[in-house]
Length: 253
Image 1 (tube, one colour):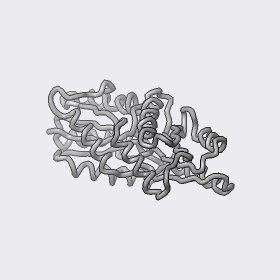
Image 2 (tube, helix red, strand yellow):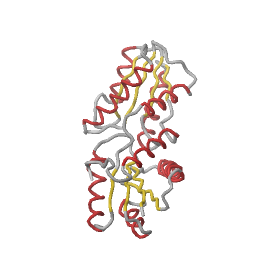
Image 3 (cartoon, one colour):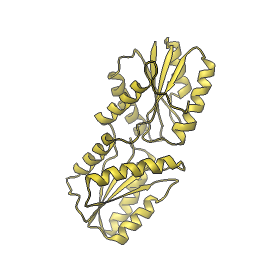
């Protein structure tokens, strides 16, 4: 019997965890598998170990583990596989398939365009769009967010699009805001490339409140990605990639 294990990041902000659970429940409803569990890598329960064991107790003979993460970085490459490999040793008779994160696609850029359009403000040739990622020391994160920024530039060829990061990578969000101040665009759009709310989203909001008090520049904060049917579709694609004989299986687990 095939089970699906959805692995979310986890957050200290309860609203973020609630949003993640609500989203995963929507994903579960779209799949025919009778055994489906969600879990968190850190900061929230159930843990990966607990949910994995629950799948086995319910009769799973194969577990498809899907990292519900936007980009491939340390969590997807090392942290999650480390735990999964430990569980694989505990239950060697259970086949484990580990999928890919959501990754880069035109679907994700479609969502970014929606987030810009729903502000009801026009992105003009005098606008600056900041695509704000979580950040990581892993070079794959910079590569992938850069690819997303390139795809977004193709949608707005007359506007400036700049990727930046909240932690552990450059240019930082602060550096990008300094660039915006120096380049003097007529307005700055900020798109948080985050799945749900959380500490990082709140840090963006707090920083912008301080800037907007000075009133030097029109800054428009877009919504984070949140639930979207195209993200659900991407998760479904990742599930089907690793389901069945001869399917793609991540190198990390």
